[in-house]
Length: 424
Image (cartoon, rainbow, N blue to C red; front, side, top):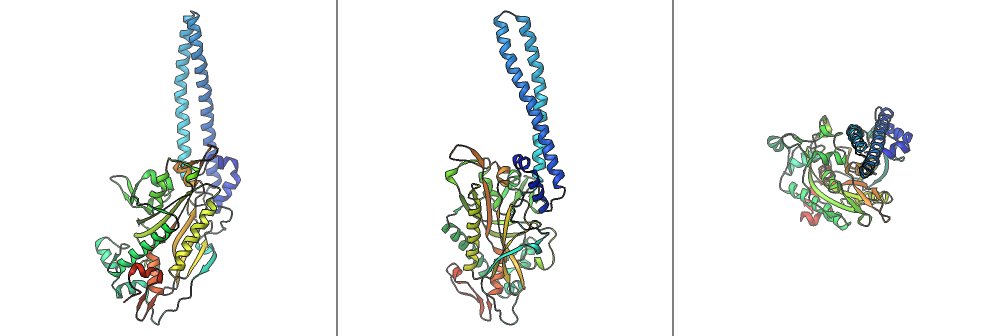
């Protein structure tokens, strides 16, 4: 969440940034935060004054007793008791204001960086790079959901029988392709210096609040009511929360973690062509990168992550493009985000396969994730994450773009993992 210093030092920039994200009532919300904080500070100042008075009077009691002025000492004791009662209400007022302010800050998104373009939605995102080869498909090319049926790779109907729509069953070489991609992505991440972790796929509410999925995305998360636990929408949540309430040494940074997990998203309101086949699922596999860094180095870390994801797509021989998200399309928690999309020749559309985000200190402030610098000062970290990669649309693009009359060609980078060069 935003820091009070960030808000009070540059209120105008914060308000303008929130307006770029199309956050309704930005100025009113920030004014309310400042008013609550003023109330908290006033209660704290009065509390500090009262406690100082208690300290002085307590010293006076000792002197009065030594001088034999017992009645005055007793009166002073009574005065101290009265002030202590007053401090309780002041402390309650201060804590109440602090909690009210925190709950309000939870509902205010991160401020986007200046380079985030203006815009209302996906149509206003800025294409910053394209790459990969032009795909030439055979006549009567099929979309991936028909290819999956033809080669017995994925059974969507069986998934509906077992669970419901959006929970496919991978079979035979389809399952092997999933595992090949997971191992390829993890091996590439480890080679780039990331430490693999295997986190839980359910988290508590504190973890959801820590990375900003709660309260913003509560309706999109699967919730286990009995235990008050949430199925993770991405490994970002458990992996980043490893560093909740932690003070790191600057020499430890940057921290680089990767994790493969299943991810669960309700995707309420999705319909039409966007949900055909693997385009939008409720459960899917993903390898996630998470980095914890200093403010000075986070921009370099972000670029390294972008280069890493681009290199994966190059090795998979897929046509791709990179977009800088506009203010109206960037996530609630991100200060800067780039999306990677691959082109589905059979569907004639771009499919998002990765978002790589810098959250500045926004998540770290919620998490109390800090580091101690060389001068022993404690500062907020910066957090970053990105998909490297999400599997469903990668699989969709591979099936569609590499279909041939003889079968589905396997990119060279995946052949050692698949043990073949063609799905027949």
